[in-house]
Image (cartoon, rainbow, N blue to C red; front, side, top):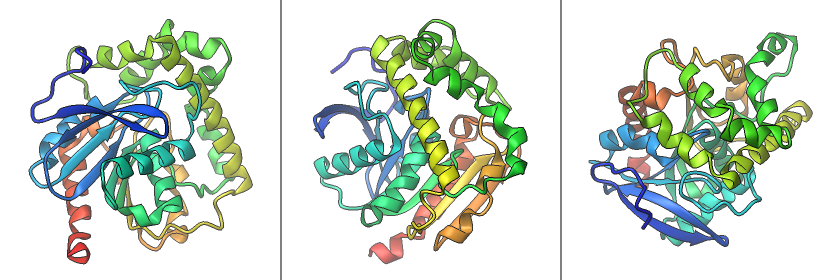
Length: 294
C-alpha cells in the first residue's frame, strides 16, 4: 500500500485490477453502494467530507480515475467513454450489479455517460457541476466561451503538460473557482503533488484534447437520439467560473426524470464548498430508490 495516501477516518484503501489497469479505490461505510467519481484536478480525497456524512447509511466507493490520484496512468483512454467502461469493470470486480452514482466535473460527465450507456448498472445518479450531453448551442453561449480558456492551454502539446506541472495551472483552477474557502491548509498541495508526475500531467493534456472532441460532439448533437432513463439530479454551483449554468438548459427534455438545482452561493468545487448540502441532497435523492430496490 502506498505510504503517501492521506489518512481519512473510516476510509480503507485497496488496489483493484480492471481492464488491464491498476486502480486505487478508497472505501468507507456499509449499505447500498455509492460510486463516487472525482473531477480534475482532484482525486478521491475531494470526497472525504461527503463520505463522513454518508458512510453511516451507504457503502462509499471512491476510485481514482485512470491516470489520476494513485491509479495507474496507462498513457491512453483519458475520455468519458473509457472512464465509464472503467467504472463498470470496477463494479464487476467488486461484485456490484447496480450502484448509485455521485460524480463531480469529469466524474459528473462520466456519471451521465454511465446512465446513457449502461443504465442497467446505475440505480440513480447525482451530477455536480458538469454539463449534460444535450446543450442548446446558440448565440447566447458565445459570451461564455471565456470560461474554458484553461482547457485549450491544457490540451496543447508540450505546453499543456508543462502548464500543469510547472506553471501553476491546476493551482489557479483550484484557488479561483470558489465563492468561499473550501480547501483546508495543505489540501491543494495534495492534489498538485500527483499532477507533478509527468504521466499524470500528460493524462490531463490528453483528457482536454478529448474535451475538444466532446465539444464537437455537442455541436453535432451526437447524443440527441439517446434518452436518459436513469433518474438524475444535477446540482450546480451557479457561480462556477469554468462552466456556465446556461449549458444545463433543455436537459429535462432528454430524460425521463431529471431535476436541476442551481446553488447561488457556490462555485465549481461544490463538494468542498457545500458538503452538507451535497450529502443531504444525495441522501434524499438516493433514498427514493430504496423502496424499488426492496
